[in-house]
Figure 1 (cartoon, rainbow, N blue to C red):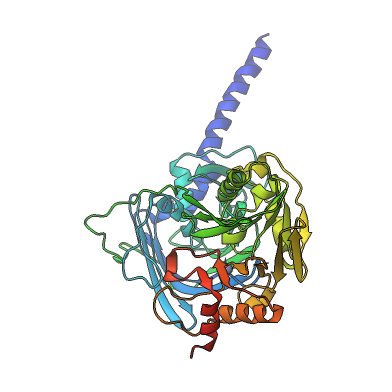
Figure 2 (figure 1 turned 180 degrees about the horizontal axis):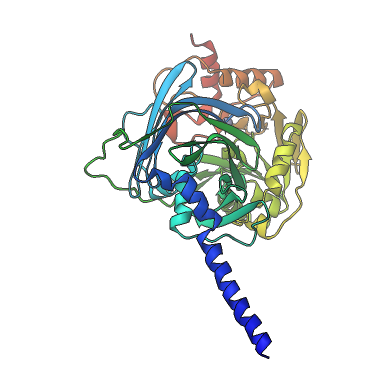
Length: 487
Ligand SMILES: [Zn+2]
């Protein structure tokens, strides 16, 4: 008995020693000791070059726009300042950021006045800082006493927390207690759950402070890659420069919830337009004798659901048999997923099938929509050069004009012979006021496509924009012809 008791006591003591050891030498604390603490109240400063790629309203899906910027960063545990410039088509744009633990001042590229920073922009800024240095985020984890989680393995101690709805993980190398990478899983209304990975390498030291000189960034689940390099002039300073002056009336703006606003218009016995004022889009519902077709659904699943609801009001007993989008940009395709959930066939050219499949299968766990909660198979109806949808009495024709649009490689337009109406996305830009000017490339592209197809048109109705930009979006065909003659 005595023997056994002694073993228990030794065991308990050993357990406590192990615990004390484990706590005093946690990988996070050791990492903080190497990558944050030596700075004290001073500032680490360095210059950098940043190769950034963005998915914008490009010519085809996944096509990236490339931006090269250079600048200087000053930072410590709670502060981050950046001054940089970006060259776009030979023109230089400057930007400045100044962040501390209660305020953020931002002068955006090319702007003359400070940006109205909102509370959520402020919270998300840490995800922008970590493309240059992980210092602020290591300090955040250390100050918030985040413990390593069960997913730690032989190589890495892994720490996890949630910041502004994003799941953030630090991977600290057990071999030397330096940060290997940060992952951020956040929600994107178009792509769903998106993972960004920031990998740090080429560590160097200045006055006992370790910092990485190379940062590789993989965004949107690895689809887009950026690279930041710390170039030279690494130094430790007592004071940073004053980049921006805080206005006397400075406050962080409240984030504004978008309230949906909808207007429905019956254009003809078979054609209805739904205007979504909160996105400045016009969606079309075509009513056939025993089914509906919906064209366009902007930005996100919520708007897709709104459109489905309105379609139900228009014709309560007719199922939505088809959903079609004029091109792959978010104002037309963003609301796709609810239509898949409702069992509609997605009309789509070969050019877009992979992209639509990606969106249909994209996990939306952080903000589940109906398709996430109740998966349904994607049904595609392929369009080649054209497709006629008809119930035997009423018909519409969909034409693939693709790159003739001079806008995207997948462009579709919709034609109604009985109404002499053409519905299209965003190709015509004729001012509401004043004389008709020379056409843009897109406008010429549409005109030439119409001539080639030999369509008899009185009116063109455009999907976006509806109210903004001061342009006509119900356009007499005469206006398009006049623009072609304008000099
Ligand atoms: Zn577009």
